[in-house]
Length: 182
Image (tube, rainbow, N blue to C red; front, side):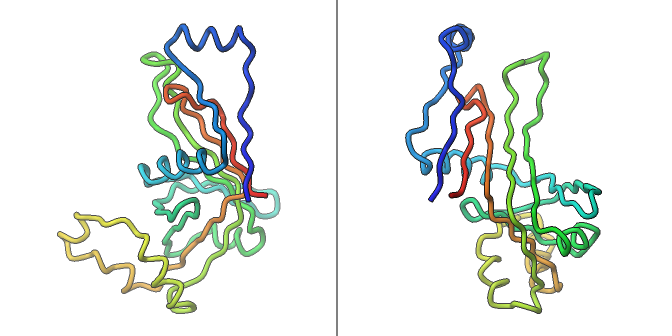
């Protein structure tokens, strides 16, 4: 089960946005907002993953792929795994390029708070095979003969299950709509 929180606007705010050609959407069900979030995840491929240990945060840009709201990351290692070993709570953000001098209301992005787990291909080959089904095809890797690289290395796989997702895209009528797992 999930719930959604959509900020309410007063009439003055609504009029300002409408004068700018922005009609804010109302989401009637969590599933309706989930589909918008999934579309955003499907159309991007880099996130900034925040992990923390001993009150020291770390943010790492990483390529990802997803299956619905669940996000997967292949990685060879790094400090993020030391953090995840101590603290499985993570956050990530994804955004589009933004130039407020061109379109002040053109900001578009997503924030997610969730729980991360990780495993290696060799530790859990069955789950690894399942996860790779969701990997996006990469024509360049195929052209270089590297499309099977994930199967050749003992990658660590980070799996992020969202607890809360907030999305902003005013030009699409979305003003900080929030999805929460219950």
